[in-house]
Image (cartoon, rainbow over all chains, first blue to last red; front, side):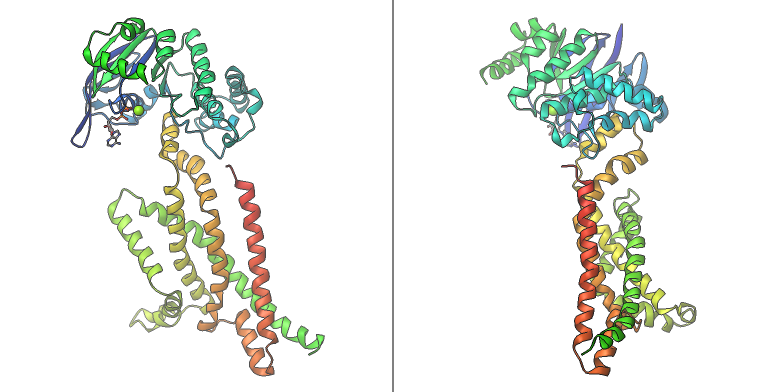
Length: 249
Length: 219
Ligand SMILES: Nc1ncnc2c1ncn2[C@@H]1O[C@H](COP(=O)(O)OP(=O)(O)O)[C@@H](O)[C@H]1O
Ligand SMILES: [Mg+2]
């Protein structure tokens, strides 16, 4: 069953048409890899899903409930409730620098009054253990490596138990030797059947972990399908050209 | 010069220093929050409000503080009809002048602090479900304070020295008593003492802000 339905999504910045009639579906437990050249609209698409961008037309529905239906947004309360089913991990982590690692995790649940302080703490420590950072609970983000920061950001996004986790190039800001630890956490999540949409340049990750791949170019979905098929045997010329360039790099 | 003489002029000068410190405390405690409200007004989506706040800041920073003080203390009472209701205690009037002036400077400092905060902080807060108020008070403000602190410290030291402008509106303070003693006794000593007292005040302030900066540091 589709947990996320996106249809005819349109978005422009001024004269620039960034998303042109984007449609796709994500099923429960899917891991979707989104690939495509820089500037093709991948981030804008992801950001639209969590309402960081306002779209100009089309629909987005989670669990059959519309965030936006044919260009008309739901009421703020409803919108917030539906959007809360999605978590997001950013390229640049966006941790709160003035708060310790554990405080980063518990801030939102505390302010949203979901459960007790003890519950937040326990859940936070549990998630830190899961991403291998139990010993960093009381440390400020500035003391962490990039890979550690991104793992904290993933743990923070998991605090709300999202049904879908979105990643926007989670390893692109990292030194090459630090990408492995982040990808490993994401693989573990995939094994636990977390539904994920991952914008990535890591073709190996897309092939090994994703069960669906989408190639975007110039605001359109050019091709989608199983990752092995799309990555080794692309049908469209633009996909071929992109993969050719990426492999050579 | 004897110890007795030193003690005899120190007493009124310390009393004058009380006025200096009191004005400083009043000005800083009120103008910092007021400055922050001004910053919010400048960034407000309500255009006329933003425009007014900008005009206010421009006016306050573009004219001498001394002129503003003279205007409030001696100028306002001269306004026809309403002037007679604007005769305030001179210390109170001067405090208002300092508050209005320094709020504009602090607003500029805070605006710079807000500009330095990455937009990713707002985005992460929104995706985590925080509303605007929670984002401002729990995510943005603490970072802004940390970023603005060195500039706030600097401005505070300037404020201590600016309190000497009370002299010009005839409110007795530290400098007033020093000048009186110099005229009466034909000695330079009271000026030196005044300088030392100012230095001690700014030293305390500097140490306080250093300590505060260390406590808030997160980089
Ligand atoms: N806030 C914005 N204002 C104007 N143009 C933008 C904005 N955000 C993105 N764009 C433009 O939209 C296009 C798609 O950007 P983006 O979604 O970031 O692509 P990708 O993530 O695939 O690199 C680019 O041309 C980019 O310059
Ligand atoms: Mg991008």
